[in-house]
Length: 274
Ligand code: C2E
Ligand code: CA
Ligand code: CA
Ligand code: CA
Image (cartoon, helix red, strand yellow):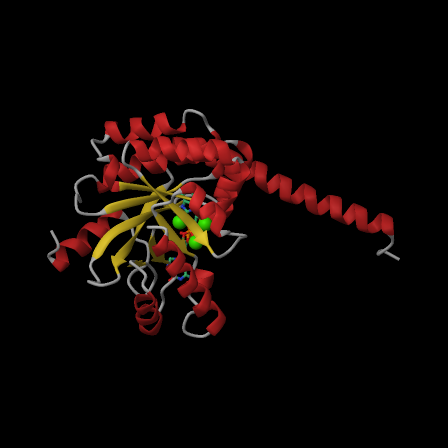
């Protein structure tokens, strides 16, 4: 009897309210978290597929000091996107990452950008400002964007990408292989790098179809003059296969987990890289 139409609607409304309440709570927590400096930026090495040397890092946001306990970035970034706080979080990440990486002059820095940030007509100016403020060379920066962004507003995307590339910043297409990714828009947007998503790259050693998709993607990207990074590399077999297939750079737990800046500096000292 509780499963009649009415009961279900009420149950559904209750569920929606709980989700909404959680979102509002997290929204307020993000606001105060920014004021109280609860957020951090961690760095995951990206290695050159041939030499195995660290070539750069991807900046990944963390919220270790959230009073109610840590939340994964997918969760709080999703909420920040719906309420506009992604602009403040995005500026924080860019500034902090440029500041942290500035002295490690041989490493490239890759920063994730949400669709909402790119929608801001001031976005390119904010990037330029963040670079200047930290004396960070534009050519050491790569911005990672997703397909959602480029397909949502292709004209604005093309203009923003062209502006950013005009100061020397590189653009990567993130999460390749998870959406509708067509060759047509790969050509149109002229990305510098394609990042093959871990859901595809992480299956090269177990799923022949995934392996075929990966090598096809690499051939197309290479023909278009784009570099290829594979993410989610977790074992030596995947590393070997991805390297053989022609990936330029590799990233994943096999090489290193994301880590705070202090740990990255320590790792470099220990290896005598610098
Ligand atoms: P993403 O951009 O695709 O980042 C890669 C994710 O894969 C990261 O998760 C990373 O920790 C994880 N990862 C790296 N190596 C491996 C591996 O070998 N195996 C597995 N299973 N996972 C691996 P994380 O840090 O939890 O971030 C999740 C997502 O949150 C990111 O996915 C990105 O979409 C978003 N994100 C994180 N930081 C930022 C940020 O500063 N700005 C924006 N806009 N989004 C961010
Ligand atoms: Ca990314
Ligand atoms: Ca990804
Ligand atoms: Ca992503």
